[in-house]
Length: 256
Image 1 (cartoon, rainbow, N blue to C red):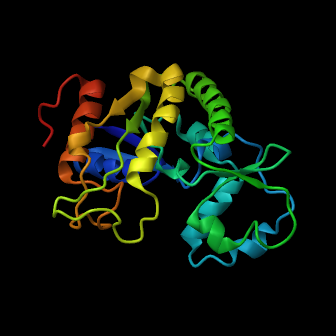
Image 2: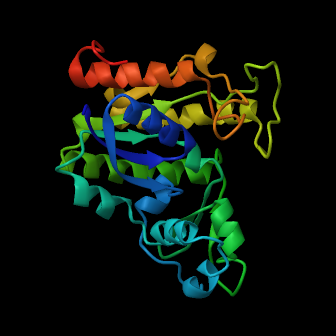
């Protein structure tokens, strides 16, 4: 076994984790569908009926994901595994739709789960949407990353954190072009917005960031979840696994 893996983020971190499991890592925990702003906000969603709303979701997994987001669960879940974590893997895909915040510092990630639950539509509340790429969102993201950075250092996870920095792709290996499937957001627009978030991360985590070359950011309909702007061919994940293993072990010898 190469080490214990904790996954925080969206599809890119999830799929990279699968590639790492294939070469000997063991996944011991994950937090998904939870923006950094939400993770380091006050827990709860004042003015909403959480129990009523989560009943609108189809599966128990979906209900748990949304409740975890509302409860800002990341710090507690990481703290419970700190001694076991060898690799903390993170991406920024779940930041893409922005975050809802209110005036008592609560926040909920804007996601398909949130929309389907109708948590913020049913009943009065003072949540407002901070849209990805807009100044208010970037400012709140910066504040949340400052808290995240302090947490990572306090929990002695600094040498174990790997942040994936990837381009969204407009092209598939089969020659198809965006849009793919149900994807809504334009990859070119998203690629113009992400650098300001990477810049915030660079202030705290420059040595933890792995930038994937643009030529490796290519999707394929053969991916298990189909073609999308943030699902990739095998070379993308091979690049990341090699980088992570080399940083952990100083070599990729013996890794298939």
